Image (cartoon, rainbow, N blue to C red; front, side, top):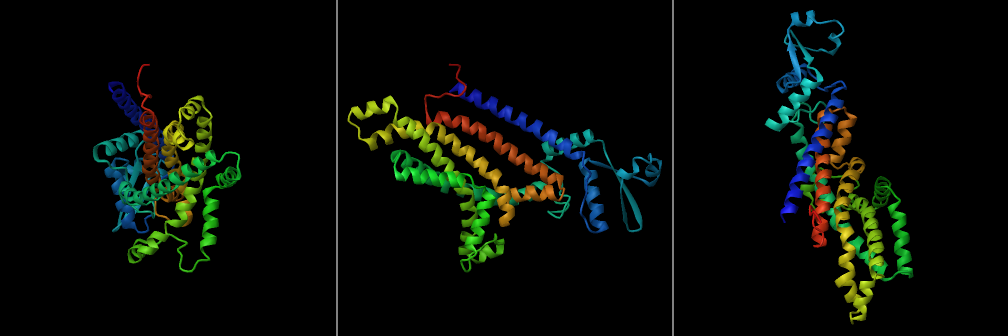
Length: 355
């Protein structure tokens, strides 16, 4: 037990160290790109640059300081005219901005403000928190749909090995596992469009609140698009693992002791075949979360996947950073959960044990 606790603590520390390095490099590289705020009025522009000064990223200069500046540096200065006054904002060196960003994150959990129409001059963490529930709910529902169906098809194919049932399931698996999710959702959109009244675009919050049926129907297309690939992966791995276990010597011994085929499969074969499959379920969740970026964009789902794409498209680097942080932490913690799940499925496996 002590070895396991020590192992978990060491892994968590390593996760935060890895995330720190990844996000630091990402931030520094993004800061090499020019900031392009999208505020339409001078008031919005002034408020935005004043906020950058408060965050420690820019300095506000006076006219004399601006005139004394080297001419090669003047193009980097942001000039805003407001109420017959001219304000000058000059960026601090990249490393100063980096340390200011670290201080804001660790002391105030302030990841900066949006620079585009996504939410101009709004806190990017609050923007992400409004988007996160959509993506998490969609992906959790997809996992709950794909796991039982995938495992069930895999078990059926293994029990009916080398029959027409096995051949049919294997053929369908190979077809759907080769089709990208964005192609599948495009096909589903075309097919469901023939059904009168069926939503082919994600409804707004007001529309979903007014019609609970519409809110439920809205999940059908994206869940199907995300689930087909996972179902095929689960079915393929379950069939392979279960087929291998069923031909092992210990299972033949169980049959000779009087157990029926069903009893030997349920009591022994399934448990041993699930050792590599259960961690795969967790990994598949991360894969779905990453793969839903394009899907959310196509179907109009206001999740963190579409937020990430919008952030890149609109050059909204603070939004990209906070979205990157979420994906990085989820991915790194998923690897820890995957490792620990081995010990849950098979108690003989002890994480962190010396022998």
